[in-house]
Image (cartoon, rainbow, N blue to C red):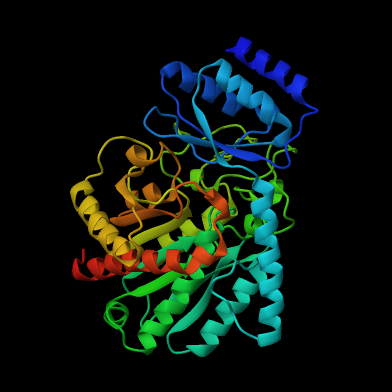
Length: 424
């Protein structure tokens, strides 16, 4: 293996002057255990700047990797030398970034002039928080904004509470954006917040019935620091940031993968102990203030019946466990609920999702929020990976936001109604 990497380093040196105009995302298909071992070693080696967009090495699922333009020729040569098949998924990442940034600038100007909010656009944290205030002001008898704590960089963390009255009633938790670069999850959550309010106001089933029995808590931005960092500039390093922004034991590698930091089989397989790793778990369970805030709020409330988290990308609807291939005790029911919810999602735009446990569907992951929620008695715990399956990856065009949100809403709505109909 060291020989492989030495050859790779030589190839990088040879091709260092042959730079592409922008990074590419390659889709790699491992065909053997030897291929898997090569990829695992590459993931650990930070010198090449490889950004693994998908995790979990298997011959059954492809791996998407963003390759810096400085390493691109050498990396392709390396894959060919080792007979590892690949295709170019995104030809020029910078082109997508530039297009996205231009659309955001144009949309912000239009919103300022018209004093409107465009749901088919990406927004920064300040604008999302302003939207939340406007929504609360427009529906004061239904919605309140709950501060559950502050982030490492002292930004407030807010959840919208949809309630028709009462304290600590049975409740549903939905969060989005725990990984900063997954912008379509934040944008979908914004649309969904507005849709809950609109459906209640217009007495559109089943929202009034759901809210007559349960409260809904919706956290649109679960990782505010990371999300702000992802908006700093159109450079890949910022826009594609995944983690939080806390200081780690390596001053050159800030941030923790918040979805590996929950107290659920923490430090097990499927999370890195290297601060430079994209899936770095942190020094201890719930060491990150953002995770602690969420966990403390849910625990202190004590009456959550469903926990759902929105991610991107891959088009998956999953349930526990993430840390183990063992079936959860409620696996048959969870699979049935997810399957029916998936049918509702499909009905809107025929978008195909895959259903299954996190472990078997996408990757092994310890310290995941869904496992944490399930292990604390929140039976109906699910994770969504929203659009797409790789054409754009984390850089989904804004014109797909509303369709993504609509189909996701149909699945969420089904699950929420099911939870109401099956109290425990």
